[in-house]
Amino acid sequence: MNDYDKRGAGGTPGGLIEFFIGSVMILVGGWLFLSRIVVTTSGFGFGFGFGGTNYQINNFGVALIPLMIGIGLLFFNGKNFFGWVLTVGGFLIIIVGILINLRIYFEPTNLITTIIILGTFAGGIGLVARALQPH
Image (cartoon, rainbow, N blue to C red; front, side, top):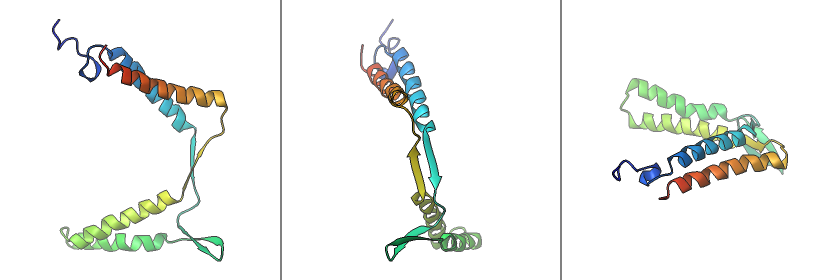
């Protein structure tokens, strides 16, 4: 066997089985962690505080105006730079408005389950890192 036949994960000798086992552990741990996350929203709009209270003002229609103008300009002339700026800008405003209103929670779970989930993920990272080192 020459040196090329002995190459494993990361171009180093050995460690191919550790790399695949670690990758599976990372995927399983990541999936278990993400399956415990709950994502909710408080409705679309931007929150503005007035007098110490937080009123939800629905600005979704205002966010659509630049997008619609940009799309109209692009249908008229597909090379219109201002049309592209309005379309991309309007789309980004809508995406940011949605992301601002997301609430992300970790579901209540017992400690042993959390340790198993995070331990599987961390152990997988350790195995992949070990597999990339020469044996």
